[in-house]
Length: 67
Image 1 (spheres, helix red, strand yellow):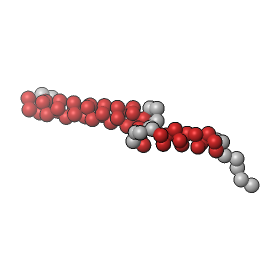
Image 2 (cartoon, one colour):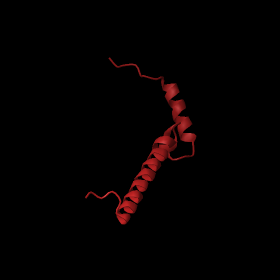
Image 3 (tube, rainbow, N blue to C red):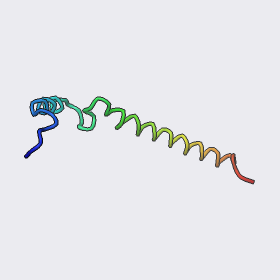
Image 4 (cartoon, rainbow, N blue to C red):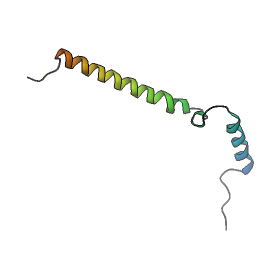
């Protein structure tokens, strides 16, 4: 005995056609995909670069050394 599908086949084919008609990379086709694939990595890279620059500045000026 087979299970009924979660979604009707017609709706699935309609969604496939919608996504295949969009001329963007596959990982940017969803509604919030730009946030997860661009904004979050960019924010992580910016904060890590800030902390690296701050550490280099502190080391070059001798700030925060333990006695």
